[in-house]
Length: 384
Image (cartoon, rainbow, N blue to C red; front, side, top):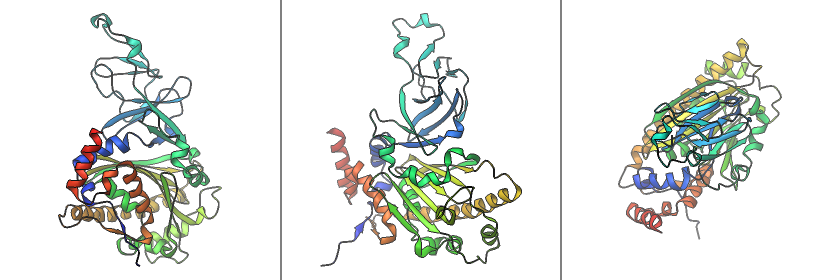
């Protein structure tokens, strides 16, 4: 008796507004989300802020040096308080009406307070958000009682530790909006099966036959690919191969590989011997994804050769990203088809199976191939 094929998530979950709303409730408000790096949060008043699936949050260094997370929403009239990243000084002040909060989230001052009869200042601090640090990366969780960070991330810290990420410094950042569902972006990241057709440059650099994905019992997976010894015929790639030196202290096999880590739901970390970067994939709605990326280097690698290697690495991988953008847009168009229900997952796509299993565990309605049945299940679950 032949085995049943392993099926992907159904197409409707990549285009349904109902499923996107369920994801906001069941995934994005319950799982640990990468929001920054410890290098951004070193002294009191330092903060990072972002909007995750519609929820504005901020992480701030308190006067005691501790990290604290808050809903980035003023308790008065819901104005967003902090923008981007920076330092807010000794207090957090709303730019709308001047309500002022301490670095611990307590409401300190209300202009014309006598005009608010019965108002209790002590009960109107910023809503807290759980915060944790793993391997130099700062995570936040909107759930009231989230799973401990180290349990949720499993071997994440172990995989990233050889690069000593807590000592790295940021040297470049950017963002873009992709016209695709966020899961489409993650699917593409999690498999190397498309490398021979979709990424000729990567095929010249990486040992595709040994491109392997390791999943875990936690919310993370890692793809490892050794670099090829054979010189590329492409000038930029060949120059990168010749000039690249692993960051100081990086052991083998990491010094001879490109490794790619995924942390559910939307965090990806690219681990190169010479540098690392992270990409945050946040849904704006069911058909648009905001990607935010930040690249890091060892502090002592500031020479001319180091800058050239980073430029070469960036050029190679920005081309890969452009190729992926075209491929995932093709997929999104296909997912809109009335004929396509679900696909199949091959042996080289085990990272996708792990990801899709996590989605189904969070939202059981995702197991329904038929959109009508799936949406009906979503609505029943919402009423339960």
